[in-house]
Image (cartoon, rainbow, N blue to C red; front, side, top):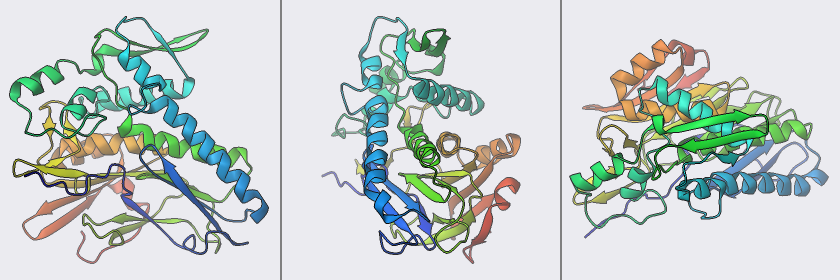
Length: 349
């Protein structure tokens, strides 16, 4: 009998800390939250008058709903779903936002040697982490091979023309899944909305992607805690000051299920076509945008500890890795990450 454990997609891998945890609506601080993309969004603000809150919340939800209408693979009428359903091979019009997301994803995909691959939708669906249901049994080698044959970043390109941006595939069955970068993009989009609204002090998050600017209601820098790889949501591994950057964590310890006696992680290795089984359980990245951070953390998780370390050093990335070992868990951070670190758990390196 199958046992489903923590199969909720998009749970927060980051804990927001500081004075934003006060009442949801006060003169000194406001916290707004809601649902989008199968996960939660949260906006913490300082210095925003109470009479602006209701209208601001509507604008936030409206913007996120628009993003979901573009990027969702769960909504059949979304822009991305229509592209996935198309078999003509002709360039399909897309927004500049989607062009930016896919361009960043393709670049990170190349730099990770394909470990971050937004075309692995067929494999994601095969293993039960997409719109399709969880498989009753472990997929066969033939099924995995058939799904892999429908993947590959080389089959996808963004075309920029005078009349706008277009997306084209040369493999009819290619299926693009932007869930690995969608939360980061939506977080950046919320930050742009705050700037448009003239709000200077905010911390915004969608799922496990977070970005901050300015200070919290107490006049101090926003702080974000990286969660320990445990089911306990309030266990912090390290505390960082984002300094106006974005941060995202990819982890294998929350979104999984058990099938045929094995734990099935939602992180799929594009090369093997199977869920990862190595000992890296969490990869956190800080970057200039949440989109960048969200793309890199997935690629690092796929690569595993040793290759992730090498890539972080080669590309000068701010990275924090947590690995399961015989004693429990060990951590590693790149020199770039150390500049953001405020403190970490006593048993961390």
